[in-house]
Image 1: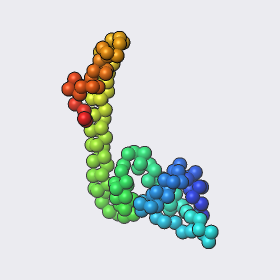
Image 2: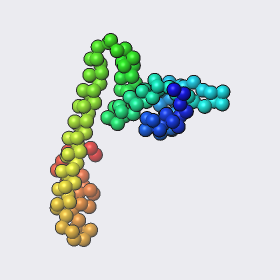
Image 3: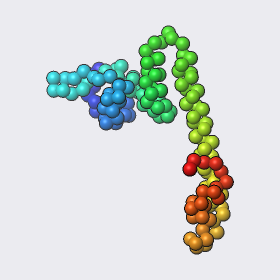
Image 4: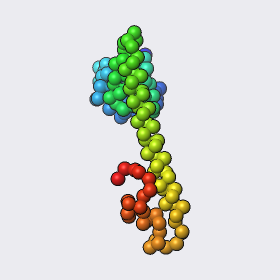
Length: 140
């Protein structure tokens, strides 16, 4: 394989600027270049970029992806650290879901309490103006 960056982007579903960004931050190694200074990629880069894209889709941050990529280069090593990264990420997702549920509940309550009258009597505006009227705990 000797792919230009546009073809790599097409095959992996990752935009060209994102590929360049991943190269700049070291997630994707700098590729060899042609005499005309064009980047060229092979199967290893396609596989690595697919791994990065899928990890990002699952919400892993760049540092976790970097660690997971390093681990993937040592196939006989224990997967304890990968498990730990995934469990920590899962716990963070659970925290965010709980927070979103609380926000949804608060917004739902605000909407239900709205009498569809005038703005001066609008419950939504009142609650947004005075955080102490919120019944759910959420970030300020």
